Length: 340
Image 1 (cartoon, rainbow, N blue to C red):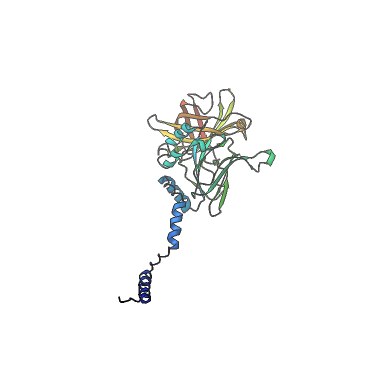
Image 2 (image 1 turned 90 degrees about the vertical axis):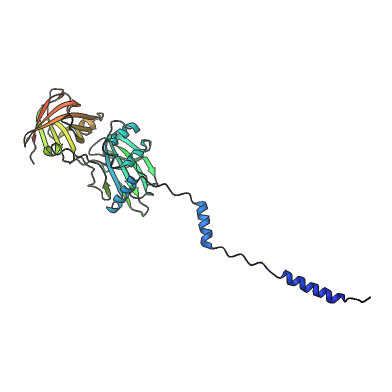
């Protein structure tokens, strides 16, 4: 029997097995660091905030393009707060211009003593906003200092404010800090000159208030400062009544018995009621010695007929609702144009 050499056969088999096993798998491609970073970011970041109400986004754009840091509006006066009262307040003039106001929650409002209602909107969505009481009294020589915090947020949301018992001593302070570090501190109040938003002491505030237009044949013809002397109120004591009418509808009314000592001062708006042939004066108490001495603030809404006897004489006749002064229900008061 012929022998087969074992050693050469083993070597041949070994080489064949080595050749078959030498085919290595191709290495997996290296992971793109940017792709990995994106995947990690997508897994950890929350979804983006939903789009803002278009009117709010438009307002923020207007604030920015006008070079301001915040927007503010005087919405009107309320004797009492609450969602229902607020909804009624903005229904007549504001919802067409700024629909986002309907979405604001009164529960988030910063409320102090007083009847004036404002809305403040930061330019940037991620601005920090703080609202505090603003205390001005003999204790700080009327220089003003912050009191308790009424509202605080870093989301840049619009905020409602209600306060200002006095027309000369505002009691709210708003501080807004933008992401770039710009800061603005301001106490919203109304101008004693024309009843509009007062921005004379601050830069960076955009006024988005809606000042109601009055009919061409109405208040614009009567604009100016008027005075009526020796007007007897419900107590029978004579007083002097002063009425300021502005073409944009702002109204300022006050009365006194002694010159320089204003008993009560009201600010507000006038609007036309063409179906009734009348003008409605929507006023609220904002100042005067009676208020400063502890009298309760209140609002008045009355309907009047205005007539010009000549360019310097105005007849104001009470028709319905609250009179300018108690005791003047249904009566006509004669005003003359104030000079100077």
